[in-house]
Image (cartoon, rainbow, N blue to C red; front, side, top):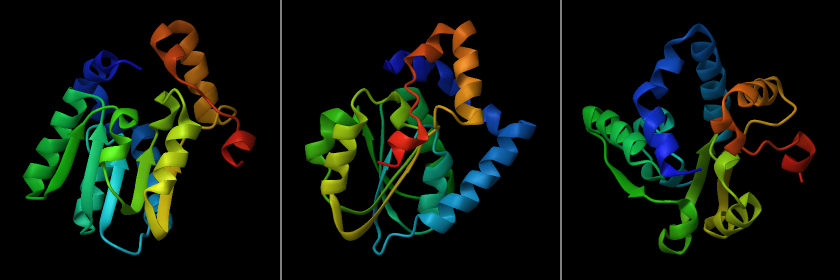
Length: 176
């Protein structure tokens, strides 16, 4: 994906969370994330922070967050949310692929609905895994291709060529 797609989407991105479907999806996602993402240490990397939907939670939980996003506009919205909380985050406006060797080690690495846009996710995931401290927690949330969400986005892609840039994976691939 190019930065321009995400920059253009930034202005309306959070509005989805206010829709009926968005509220339910966000609530379910948050419950699962809070149960599953429990690093034993404070240093956390968030890959694809977007507008800060999960960054806010990570900061509120007391994590020392490093947040990465390719979009200037999305990150600007995330920065505003964190500033309103009085929180601190180390921000990297960049493609994760370009800065992997500059980030250091983390107790936890978190990413939600980002790897659908990463051209070589296996390579990036392998490198991220190397950056985990022993016993670290890695949580990557993705939309599986044959899931209802994946099918929905594939239908949208037929009418909106922007969505053709997504890469959907089958559950069997994700579980490898």
